[in-house]
Structure formats: structure tokens, C-alpha cells
Length: 335
Image 1 (cartoon, one colour):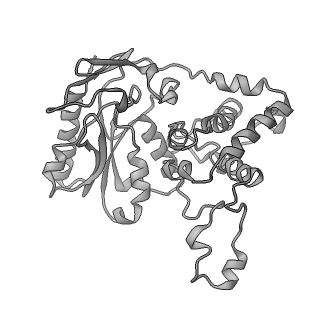
Image 2: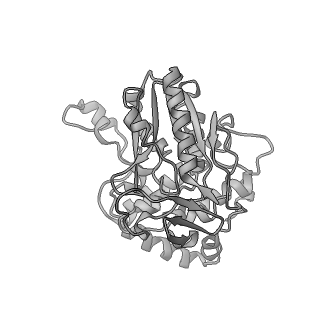
Image 3: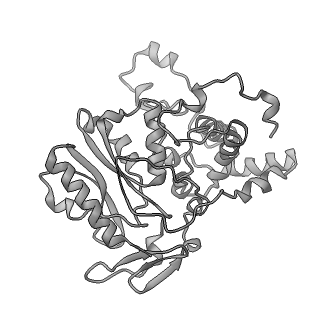
């Protein structure tokens, strides 16, 4: 049985020590929200001991601290940052380190071993003092209320097999056995005839509203300028005409099947060897598109054909920037 009060106390002790010793300038961590067991992210310096006392770790720390780092890179520049990560955050951090988006020497990594994430909305809102949060191999409990892992919407957590986290500091022990992921949706897709598969994906592409929520929430979508949506850097009222003419426009914002297909398939290719299967793109999609179904086709091929696991080790070369003479040729990727 995991006791997250005890683990949170240990996490606060580590973070407070790093700040007091001057080992870091800022700690990025989850803190208690106004509506337990919900949490929020915060960047905390030593002038805010009140926030240090609110640092927490539990299965309800669903957001990514790495996405926070990515979005606040400019504000954190030049600072030594302590960052609290769970397993999938650690994988995402490794991807960004591989691509030199972040520098390892600027980070102190505090890892929280994760058994999976839980949906706060399934639990009754607590009144008064926040109740104890515990979990075991089968379920998560908040006070006297218990729900099984399978009841939560974080389906990628159920198939997570990552347990290679090697941070500078670590809290917790795994309480749920992690095994080889079973991606049943891939068997269903690969069993479809070519025409059936085309119709299946056409229906998905047609439903996309191009809000880009999937891109914004992704911890490893970190390009300064997106190839699909160049945005302000490429075309603004201040952009010189020559730059406007030279800006690539791979897809318009028109909600058409062909334009949506370009966006979603280009993003899937860009994520090959980078997707860490956190599942946040799918959860953020306002129309409920099965985005992991698209990404897992490349995830499976990258792992099965090349034996590559995204974010396993920051010292590994990026998948799309590496080559070995032993790599299989195109005949190895028939599906």
C-alpha cells in the first residue's frame, strides 16, 4: 500500500533542502489545489516557503511538469531548476535533452515512481482537511472512497511498461507490476483491408477541428515554429513580403479532409521515436479523436523494427537523427 502523504512529505523535504542549499534557484512541482485531490503546477523559489509546504505527489498529479518547462523556457533561462517528474515526464524530459532543447547541467531531477494516474472527478469533493490518498496494485483510495485503476480515463497508464527512471533524487516504490503493453487497438487496425483502413482514418481526419490542443499539451512538441502552422514567426503584419512569400504553408486552416490529413499524418511522422505515450493529446482533444491509435502505429513500428524506445535514455541519439548499418531496410516495415 502506497501512502502519498508520506511520499509527499519526503518530496517536500528534498525540494526544501535544494532551495535552502542554493542547489537550485527554482523548483517546478505540483502543489495542493483549492479543491483536493486536484493539484496545480507551480514554479517555487526560496522566498515562497508557503508553496514549498504545499508540494504534493499522488496519482492526481496528472499534468506534465515538462510541458510547464517547455512553455516557460524563456522565463527559466539562466536558472538552475529542480523539476519533479513522474515516469512519463522523465521520458519526455529525456527526449528534450536528446534534442538539446534543454540542458542537463541546468536541471536537478526529482523522480516520483508512478503506478498510474487517477481521475479526480470520479471522487466526491472533500470538505475540510484533505483526506489521505493511498493506492495498491488494484485501486486508488481517497479517504474511504475507492476506485479501480481500470475505471480511470488514463488508458495509456494501464499499458505503461516504463520503469527505467534514473533521476538525481527519487521517492516512492512501484506498487503495481508493469508488464509488456498490449495494444489491442493495433491488431484491430492492422486487420482491416486497405480500403477499410482508408475509410476508418478518413472519418477521423474529417472530425478534426484543427484547434491544435493535441500539439499544445504534448510535452515533446517543442519546435519554435510548427511546420504545419507557422504562426506569428512566419506571417504577421510586420513580416517582410519576401519572408511571407518564402514561408512554407503545408496545410491551410481550412477544416477539410485533405488539410486535416496533412496535419495529423505529419504530426504522427514528427512524433515517430519521440512519442512517450502519455496520452495527453487524446485526453485534450475536444472531439474525442483516438489520436493514440494513429501514433501507436508508428510507436509500434519504431519499437518492433528498430528496437527503439522513446525517452529511455537521454544519451541515446534521437531516433530520426540516427543510423546504423544494421538497420533493416524498407522490407522490414511492410505494415
